[in-house]
Image (cartoon, rainbow, N blue to C red):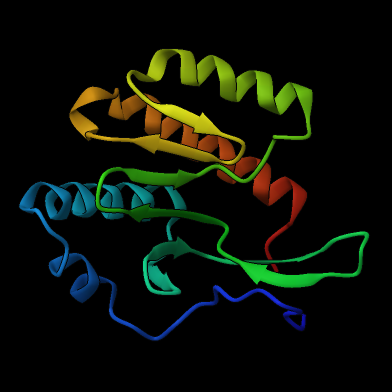
Amino acid sequence: MADAGNTTTATDADVESHIAGLEPEQRRTEAKQLLDLYQRVTGEPGKLWGPSIIGFGSYDYAYPSGRTGTWARASFSPRKGKHSIYLMAGYDDEAVAARRDALLARLGKHKMEKTCLHVTKLGQIDMGVLEELIGHDLAEMNRLYPPA
């Protein structure tokens, strides 16, 4: 599907090199933890999308407006002050959102903004619950956008 305006696309940049360049050391360590978690849950290798998003798999979308594009099926970004974990499914489906919200209630210290879960330190959250959240989101993405 043609990408009509999405400026963040998959690159050939090396994910391991990207993570190795993160500062401080705790950010690198936690990014490696997230990389391992996502690879285990998705069964996909990580791929760098734009300069800082690590994505797993992809899907094509088309909005009623006509905008189309390709995006990572599951992704996170180890940003300087926090990790951004993208939970793309369910923000417009009450049942899916309710399940996500029940998991978020058990997660630990976080901030949620529409499809972006912000976590400052992985030690402040329950990693088992995070794994459930990622798995739940991936299952919904696969339902909404069946893999080819």
